[in-house]
Amino acid sequence: MEPVPQPERGRGASGERERPRRVTTLRLRQMKQEGQKIACLTAYDALMARIFDEVGIDVILVGDSLGNVVQGHETTIPVTLEDMIYHTKAVVRGVRRALVVTDMPFMSYQVSVEEAFRNAGRLMKEGGAGAVKLEGGERIIETVARMTAAGIPVMGHLGLTPQSIHQFGSYRARGTDPKEAAQILRDAKLLEEAGAFAIVLEKIPAELARKVTESLSIPTIGIGAGVHCDGQILVYTDMLGLTVDFHPRFVRRYENLYERIRQAVAQYADDVRAQRFPSEEESY
Ligand code: KIV
Image 1 (cartoon, rainbow, N blue to C red):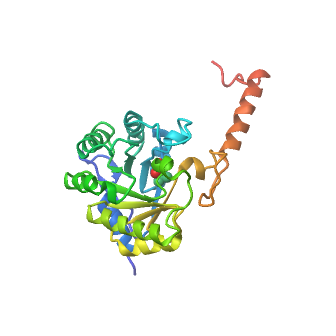
Image 2: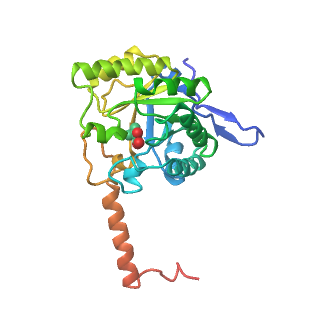
Image 3: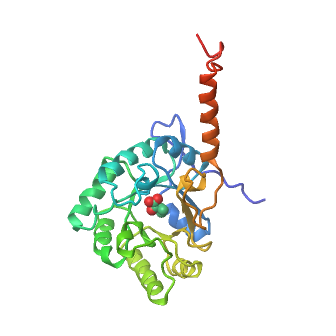
């Protein structure tokens, strides 16, 4: 009889309480080798991070998309390192199992390798991140190589890179022409050589993502990059239907929380105004 697969569990240092075994960068590579898909989501606070972690999400990304979804900005450009540290601390408090990856915000790693080091160090030491994510390929390779050599786990991000919005002028799909596709493939290989442990591929053709995925031994995590990637990531507010004005075709909505929260809050307000809340049972 086949042995029944056991959940990954281990004992804490004191041995008294079972806790789930942490997802590591090594484990993600093994998952690719074993053909197990990697499920990733963004989170920005302890409340949501705890739910995602309990369900078994493997990687929780503290994305600089918090600039859009939490702070209400139009782009991720205004997000600061202090913002990322603050939200990383909150997410880390909610997580016991998942690998927490934090985005390095715009201009926190482009000025110099030294500054990138200092800032990545703060995200890990003060924020508690398990790894950092940087957007770009060839132009940041030296930074990635120096970071990984120093023990900072780096996730790459290719294809649509939202921090370059003002350079490209739109959020269109990338890698749709042969020159751009070849550059993405080349960047992916350079990132792997520089020691990155995984690469996010955003909004590129599924066929190109397949090529990139097959040419690397590190996992690819797709968002709008088709089914061939080793894992998938979505911004959680999109997949739960909390963001209403954003409907790219790569987002699958699993809930309509915007509407459900509206209805619940409207009901509460009605109850307060009609003195139906609080009831006697809800009073002391
Ligand atoms: O900032 C973010 O949420 C991201 C994901 C879209 C991959 O980078």
